[in-house]
Image (cartoon, rainbow, N blue to C red; front, side, top):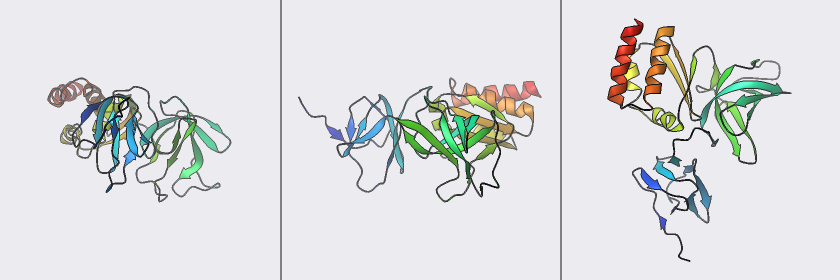
Length: 235
């Protein structure tokens, strides 16, 4: 049986299939994301899709609906319960995630947030293994919140994982129209197919939510045109 050819990671998005293998760059400390594993001193595809990369990571882009946790990814989670000193959190994956009740900046056993079922958190994946429940924290590696927090109010949108990746890109073309139309709004984009939206008015929150959902199926220009109509109709 012929050996699988090992290739260099492409500079541009490219279609790959299961079993494709790529060299590990000697001058980069890459994190492998969904659809890829380190195997036999190479990076191997475990799922078909489009391989993409940046200076820090490489992953397979697929329009999945079910989230597979990956270390260091940011997720929007919903508290569903508590066991002793740990919260049980729905992140849309196959398993419920766990988070310590003191996994917040400055939290101690005496001074910590008291969360209830239904509360929403923007958190970081700190443990991800197919054999155990994923673990989350609302602090970065230095113990700082850095945007990770309990999310108050707002609205959660369910969308594809592919749209979330596009929105989390640096200077994403999808977010610029929002900056042009709204003076004040907040977005927390989780890599688990959830986007939390909050604006200065409920009407603007609705308009932003509709625009983001339409970005799934429309071009940016068509979505922007629809956004203008929505803003006008809502007044």
